[in-house]
Figure (cartoon, rainbow, N blue to C red):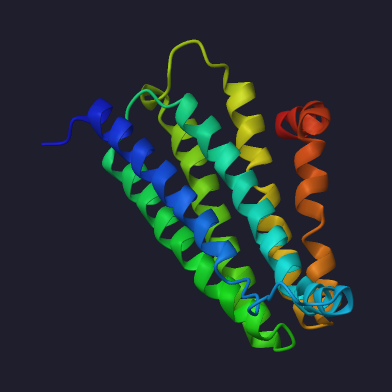
Length: 209
């Protein structure tokens, strides 16, 4: 028998652990050669330049996961209890999230292959969609929500959670153009995230139509 309140607390702890592990595993994809104390400044500069692409992919992925973590925390802050459907949605989210360090490693090895870029983007798309489905589940089942939360605010948060999956979908199209276009498309994530509260009135107007 499922205790909906206990399930919420247990799943929240599991989610925080998985998010933390995913972020930690990302940095392991940045492989630096052995650096000796006798290395010259030019050698250190060459090492840094050679690893800039891997560091860039790490920062890109860290930003996307961090944005999803913030929104996941916001999701659980309005959940009073879980039902089985919402619980399974969140478990699938965590499953896709644990794949991100794997697909990120492929990008670190070779970011010139369109298929690799697309697989990575699809992975992030799956994470974002599962997070959005969580908000949709709450909107359809008010008994799962904490008391006093307005539906307008809930719908605005639901719309806001679409930012990352929409960027991931855009990056799939960009991948077929060039790897540079693919990378640049992800710059939308920090831009949209930083402006999310300013865009909230616009989202509310759109949702009321």
